[in-house]
Image 1 (spheres, rainbow, N blue to C red):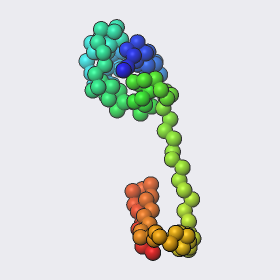
Image 2: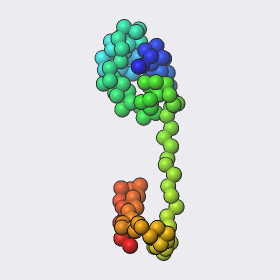
Image 3: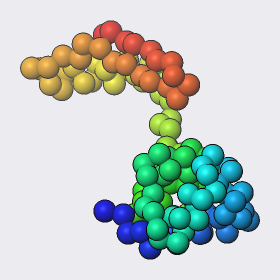
Length: 124
């Protein structure tokens, strides 16, 4: 469950980070200004829609950090490590060695997915 007091502190941290007022923050996430006031005073609890509007409006805000305080703010996306591409001849010899080492199983298909959304399929 979300701790309301801690959640409010994280909202205030976002507002300070972007040098916004409560009113400009409300405008930025497209909610009524009174919603921010009621939330910051502890009168209301945040709705799921409210939380998602914050995450959608500010790229540096991580959902888990906002809800639970886990992670960091501003959130920095880590790029996944990309494997070093193999030469075609190395791929073929690797596929052959895979089929030789396990006589009960044979490689039927190898699919390589690339970060641009394309893929290649190999049939030994």
